Image (cartoon, rainbow, N blue to C red; front, top):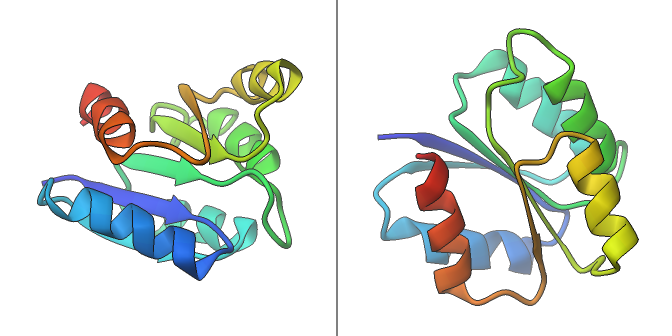
Length: 119
């Protein structure tokens, strides 16, 4: 069983992610800001990270870059999920090291498909 970290500042979005991923049987950990996401990744063994871009304290692009430039953490897959759907946003997300970039609103099966690629 894998441990999935979900970082999103919207409670409704967190609940949607949890409902979608419950069926996978993986452990779900949630946080509501970028700094808390980084602290969790450093203090627990996380197998996959789902990151919103627009969050308080640190945005998802910053968190992704910090994780992907850390030798201990850089192999953890990062899926960015955001309402920022411009090609330039996607380009920037991938440039920060994101493994996938999903835009909101997404279909639950699209999220499940992407998660299955990595765990």
